[in-house]
Length: 273
Ligand SMILES: COc1ccc(C(=O)Nc2ccccc2)cc1NC(=O)CCSc1ncnc(N)c1Br
Image (tube, rainbow, N blue to C red):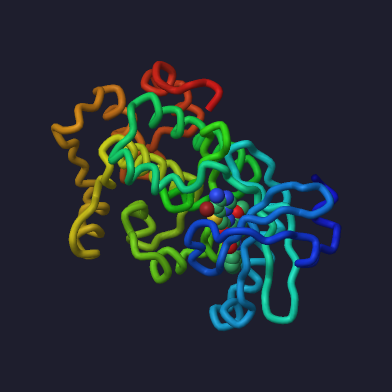
């Protein structure tokens, strides 16, 4: 709804309901816009917290970028408003909740489910790269599930592409490609690496370079120390795709449009995504 961005929203426009997921930098509530009865997720960020972490400009940039992104596999940011102490983000509500909880519940996904998720994420990333937006932070914690079971990339992060957020902000390094671990500049091919890590984790229930210590994870990533466990049994086509994505030289990684033509995706992904 294009009008949502121009309209000046206030908290009085919404009936606020139960708290949703564990929003890291703010609380997220189920809410209903009173006039349209439209159900949304309302994310509340505290201005003091934004100030002390100097992310106000990043938030403005993210809101600007997100307001132009329209894709079935990218969670919508309809608009925002603020009051004396808080900033409110009006988000699309993903009715089937957080993917990481579903992955914990199932331990790992079937090849059909994994391939369907990976192909829908690849299409969302192709769309983002077409708009010169990279690094949509595609780890399980940032993925939600819509009412039809479709995946939605929801950038929980503070900013869309700051490098330092990765290293300082979130615990896991598992998703960092070698060029980021070795902190050289990166491009859209970082998303191909992260998608390969995600595909592995969907099929095995753990990320490929997991280790007890950060230093060991760094070493395994830089070495591309990729091993496939004997259990659960995974097809060689799936392993072939993952091996073409987790390649150290970023220019040698399988391009996203080629991923959509890979036999494992063609044979396993549900076209409706
Ligand atoms: C487009 O989605 C976003 C866009 C931006 C930001 C954000 O905080 N940006 C930001 C915050 C501070 C500084 C700079 C950027 C966050 C999200 N998304 C989220 O936080 C997801 C909230 S949880 C949830 N949402 C819907 N349905 C559910 N069932 C659940 Br559970």
